[in-house]
Image 1 (cartoon, rainbow, N blue to C red):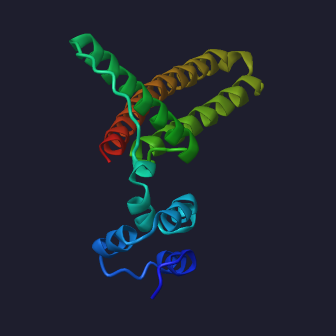
Image 2: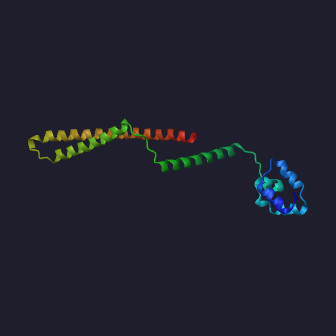
Image 3: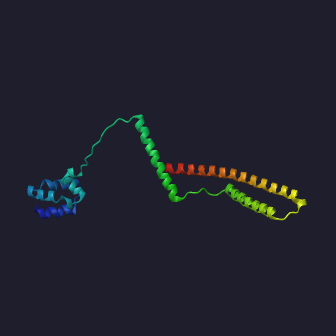
Length: 182
């Protein structure tokens, strides 16, 4: 077989070489004008063939600037990494609308709110009902008792709310730790 431009072009485009040495052998046997043609049209061949035609096409030019890292540099880098992780966590939380699963304290919180509303309506009813002057003192004691009960319920509600808030924060922290270790 004659090694002219057309035949060599077909051989290189088909890339039917058993191993890389076959490509090198073929390129060694080429005349200068055939090799020049192949070199100028090397972009149409496979990357394996192009590597042997012009290896410098595959060199990656890099410049490295060497610097000795100090403790401060390492600290700064760690801080930036942590800030980046925190931003990703905030994005994850906002996109996924993370909520702690409800538990008994949440149920009790709702119950206390309903109790407060019931006591307030009871208080309004007692205040709005007519009371004869003889029973006013009794009614005032009843009103005071209901108001004290409302205050107690509100205090219990505040306490439950603070506990729920702590649980929410704990849940988010544990979820964040799991997320960051993934």
